[in-house]
Length: 552
Image (cartoon, rainbow, N blue to C red; front, side):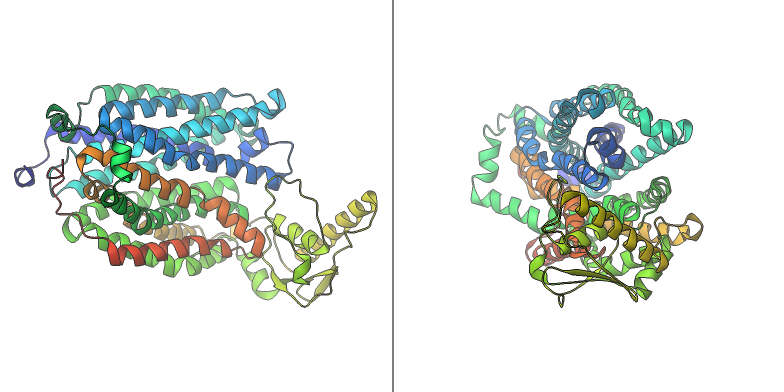
């Protein structure tokens, strides 16, 4: 059957399957990533009682909640997909996703219904995550099981474009709405429009998917009565299958995930939060890079049909681990040269006794400042200032050195509350003046942004994304037998992308806050991508010539 398929071109029905599956999945990714693109505004609307920094972190945590539950969605919908079929399972997932997104668009804010607003918001994010846990596996398998042998990489690469196209679509709709309504109206109520638009996309997606037939591989297996009765236990309760799933996670999807999220989401957060680039400007530059990079998914997917999936994916992980630090440093010089120059000429140093310093990650914003060290480091982190720590300080004291200027942090212990607040305000003002004198900007100067270089660097990150992601779906499909493919594929993919990748922004920013270095968050994707390159390079076998019908 495979040899016959290889000798022919794609039929009209097969092309329809690729187009329809990809389009529906684009709409679903659009729904899922709207939240991430609007995290800053959602922070103000639903977490308003907190200060700006804590509210943004809480918004990121709610964003991450959708990723945390994706593996559970993979188990639920993967089981259904292996028992009742691919088509109807990912029809259900898109209904859940679309309705959850639409409800966010009409959800009252904290100012209207209080704490119920963020609780409901997080609940909707959890539903979105569950739906996404069943969507990707269904779409990738559905296309792969229709594709001719020898062209699975090229066909499934269209599914791989959908996540990036969904992000791009969300940015375009947001920017268009912002432009039409103006910044004030958009921040007030216009942010709801992109969520409300999802109801139209939902109707189109359901109509498209109802017109499709079941996957031929699954239909044949079902007709022969050989579907799995317990796909979860068969996939992960038998060492032979569990070993492949673990290898798919550690040696494939974990590294792919951190490269994907670093190249798209973390790059956007880095521009806006660390380099202080205006949100609209940053989104436009990221959107341009997405537009440039998206065709490369097809290029690398097609190339993988000739040279193999493994060498392309592993090379992408190696390049990511080797180049992230210099690329993001170049991004700082291109997007905010004044900040990069100030850091090079007038380094900020916090002179403290290390025993006085506690962990700086404070997502609730309620932890009390316990020491002068904490006060100094929290204040600098809130202003996105990178700093070094000199451990030669005197116990109970902290000194902030900005170039040749030194500012002593006030004593935080045994001071009346009113006096402590006045001291803290005076300290922040003094540090702010010193930073300004040392050339540290409060915002990136639009006139000094090297837009072409920023887009070029972001496009390079997109090349890496396309290398690790373009051939991925075909390789995952080829690693597992038909009877348990939906379940076996979905769980390692969504643990990799939901946990290793989806938690990257919040983990990286926690590392930055703790260390004081705006580049230190890159250690997380560098180490994970490097580990995947080693494990995958040594233990993964090439799959491009596997006959997926032979393992029904």
